[in-house]
Image (cartoon, rainbow, N blue to C red; front, side, top):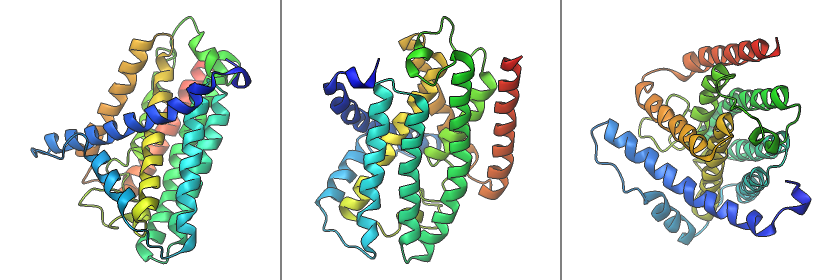
Length: 285
């Protein structure tokens, strides 16, 4: 499907649906985490209630750029989701998404808070680890189809997962980083054990914090949509694969809480990079 001839209502409706789905997924993530820890947990729709409160609060800025970067991040995330829905080139989607991640990181580095600046530096490490694996997925797509087009993936006679199982396992690391699962929550999280308080989000408040959180919901949906590409030949298995990836990261969030981020990031990133590269080399033979 050519972006120039795409159905325009789809461009507007897809990000709206992604925001709703992202909010539900965030609520489900918190709910499942609570259940695994023998707690009742918040209501499923608690993220939407929190968002309503944030949008109704007065804005207070400690730095003028903190009003700019959340909006740029939200615009980039919205554009990336819309491009994915329009089956544009995956490489273009990833570059737009990466721009939003950079805006988010710079926003944290602009803050005068030492918590935010330290978390911003950690966010750069997360960006390196996650985005590297995303572009390896794009490389695998090109290797299998000769194109970065998402339409080419759906047109494959066989799904990608049987040929790229190691790459899919490595991609779970990128998903864990995006979901801020332990121990990859060191740059910003709502977990009580997060040692940097709000991390990158320390000095965000009101609508600015709401924009950053909505962008995070959109990015979460985008990552799960990319996970579904490993079985894009049929809708039901694709959705099931995305749900499975989501549940696996939730489990990781609860079993890796005691691990240090330096230890796991270095070893898991090297392991994931090795698995993904090995899988691509096998397919190239």
